[in-house]
Image (cartoon, rainbow, N blue to C red; front, side, top):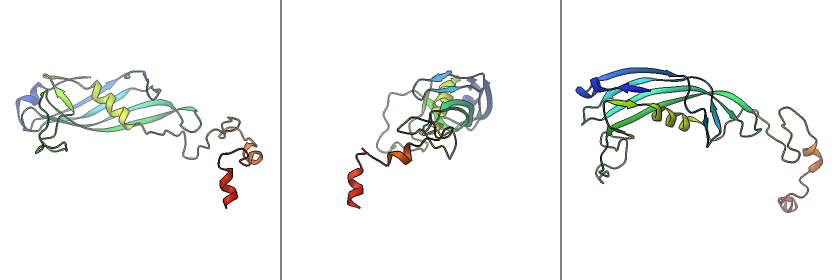
Length: 179
């Protein structure tokens, strides 16, 4: 996903639209064990902000992913869509001053370094998708999860563990006595 931005760099206020469709990014994210199965579509605009060579990229990234449900561990497919709003600026060794702060204004530090007239948007797309993944992914709103006693998937099987267990041996049994 390489984007030639030489025309945008020439003129303050210049805007260029882009659209990339790539077969897929890294097939499996090792941290979340999410498998990206659909094409990745990255589209948006890049704009010269008028200050130095700072560029603002606004857009969306979309793909399909296969991951395990947090409650029942069933693997399922779901759409992932992320809004992207990042800033590219020349790579400087300077730290932001106290006056600049670390906010989101024109003087805030860049999200990504600008090292030449060609931007590789692969890292931006990958970062956006990873940040868009929820911390807890559920196969459905009503997912019943896995039985903590027998390990049955409560969405597919019924088990009698809840009725027969009654909390015996639970570390919270002492609380029942207090009520």
